Length: 164
Ligand code: CO
Image (cartoon, rainbow, N blue to C red; front, top):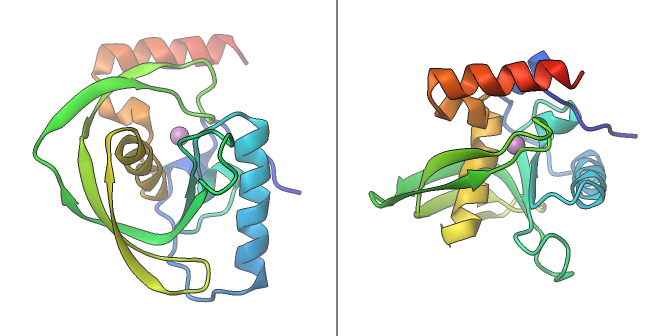
């Protein structure tokens, strides 16, 4: 049974390993991640957030409203960032209670494998692009608090410390 991992667990700061085998173990990981994402009312989740240091992420911009909206990206690689950026609020299941204004590209192109190991390319825009960039950051050990200024970061970490 997988469990949601929260800051400051060191697995969240680690760079994750490429997936090389597209097998039952991978499918079980994705199923377990989906359960946690939906029960936590998230719109995205990265494998290190359940303690698995693997390059796997899920997104569902509908938060489960559309049963077909969930997408699993394995070994995702952003090959293009739009120069146009937008700053908007973001939360993170591993940083409960923190809402930050984070700048992101409005669109990204991502190369990834699907759950069967097929190589795909897809352009994500707007909210989807924001979720994908947030989750890809997790695979490189980067959290949204790493994308904001020092003062905001200090305040957020203090708040998280007080909630423990
Ligand atoms: Co997150």
